[in-house]
Length: 429
Image (cartoon, helix red, strand yellow):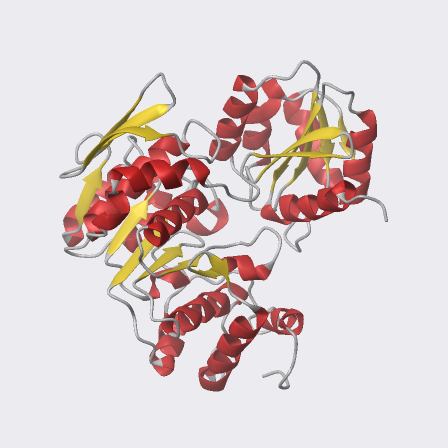
């Protein structure tokens, strides 16, 4: 345990030393410490799993519940810019002091249990939430579901947004195996929403085997999108028409929103489904690093954490529907468990020039290796940048007035890039 008065940055560095593995799936360690903490769990715990769309779904849940007067804690990961983003109470990020107090409380009881960085942070979120007298917790699953630290407590309702290939080194090499891991968030007799029309057989089998109440898109709830920037939702009991489109960019966000509404209905949190509230709240929701447009240093930038082929396909669709008169430059950084070739294939038709950079993580693919793989798959040269600063500056100088620069891949690339672009945008003193 660190000395009293140690800053959050020191705590975060210390957390990285506690476990020999950065990722070590399993619930025993977290459950043991959770028992020692003896924290009170609220009546409503919403657990959100899936390959893509988890962050968007948490953001929508949080915004709707807060607007409806519920007191809400939301846990997400990873962060884009600051660690504090991971833990929010009533849509306000936790302070350094709150997080440090939670870390200290965990350190006082964990003894020699080797928690990972993510496990420690998940427990810290629960400790912070337990001190705030909240009505609901909304927890994003970090990886998979069955063995993820967020799954250490029983949800009152859960959501699996979709299943695609990602984290294959830990979850499995095919959709059915990965889907089984994500299905681990389901519980007997507890409603669980599946947010995509393509439902893996392993999800159906597991729900039936444990007696979970599985709600499926197209059977138990559905949506239709109109031609006037509105959409309709149909749930088991709740029907809503002419809802404004979500503020989060991408046509797929309507599907995410429909699954969120189905989740809130299943959980009995129906105050958040008021028609006027939906139209007031959904169109105003934004999320850092998700198809985020930035104008900085005389260039047009689009930043998106598309780090797997499914997410890259969605980003490609967004680029296709918002074509620019000029070229599209892509700055890419990915971690070593990602399907580089799948990401490149998805984006290649919309990208004119590629730039590879090493993301800010020990698990990042080195820029030279990433550039080699991008060039091989795209059939075009890929520039190797020695640093993020070099990549941003090269793209900025090379781009013409009508060009756009896409920064995509790992959170550990997009977050630092946003900070750099913020510096570009500041007026000189």
